[in-house]
Image (tube, rainbow, N blue to C red):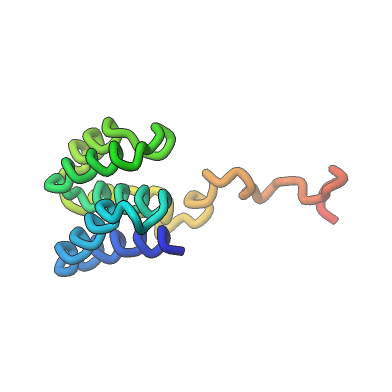
Length: 131
């Protein structure tokens, strides 16, 4: 729940630029609270700052990755550098992901990446077709 809330903050800041400074401050605080949040919250805060294109947070992001000993499966410094470079415009990464996974005009296209979504899939557990 907490990590979903942190993710929601970055989306809100992307949609409402006037809140961006406050959200960036909150996300940075999550990274520096070593006694508080758990790893999913830390990862969500890292992704949120990168998604907002906050280049000023690069040093904070790298320090958090090192302090929390995040594995390469969670987050890598190379990811931070690449994404901040590629998505230099604030909010560009969030918009890119939203457009990729939630296209307004093609719901089926938005869901096709999900392996369980297949209109023609055999729905019977016995393999005899729809029942």
